[in-house]
Image (cartoon, rainbow, N blue to C red):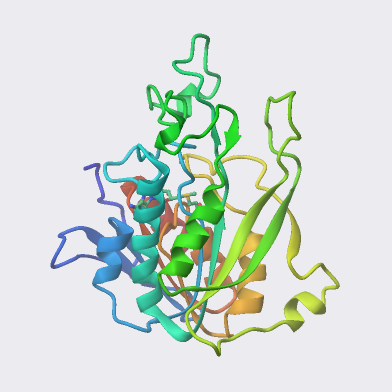
Length: 300
Ligand SMILES: C[S@@+](CC[C@H](N)C(=O)[O-])C[C@H]1O[C@@H](n2cnc3c(N)ncnc32)[C@H](O)[C@@H]1O
């Protein structure tokens, strides 16, 4: 484990989890809003959190075989799609438990292609971000589910369908139209320009402020938001834009509510929640990302 001795101001405390011995940090913004950052596997950390603790969840998990976050037990590099779907759905089981009955969860998730092309023969321009070796999505065998090479796997819907089978209610499949095209070097299909933001709830009655989208005169289930132009300086997460989080909170989180991101990365959800006077909790497996979050949150 890397060094986690960062200098903390008086309004931040660092402690260790009694069960996991992993570090967590708690702090308060100048306006008195509390935050907490936990290092560890989302599923384990969540199992130590009380039922019905949060009003809203805004999160983006690791996508299937897209990036290496350089940690043991990371989600995203499973051999089969169903292992990935199960790993994610098991985290979401815990998320559902800690969400209040009136709570709403926004899950931003992107898709992956099954290439089936085998070992890369040339230089992989993305190799710096990938220490994968031969990725499961490049191996022959159709990922064990008979996929033809070049198939779009349909990962987001496979996850959404599994979660729906596990008692989540899927209320909307919002399209995030990523203004500023994805940088895909493809010539034989349309380049992708959107991802999903699934809106899930756990009961029939929940907080929903529809005016937040109606008032702005925008499509209610298609949000055009510019993707972050570059990675967060100093750490390799794939951050989503502040505006995406802001819009989720505007529609799905009461004022002064409590917000969770179980795959917090650089802490976009926490920062935006705190800036809107809500309390925030984040979990991430990567200690460097946790330290980055703590350092940036203590400035708020
Ligand atoms: C797509 S990134 C999240 C980026 C974040 N939305 C932001 O704005 O920076 C996914 C994150 O999940 C973390 N992660 C991967 N596996 C995890 C696990 N099992 N438990 C908790 N975090 C995990 C990675 O370290 C990474 O930071």
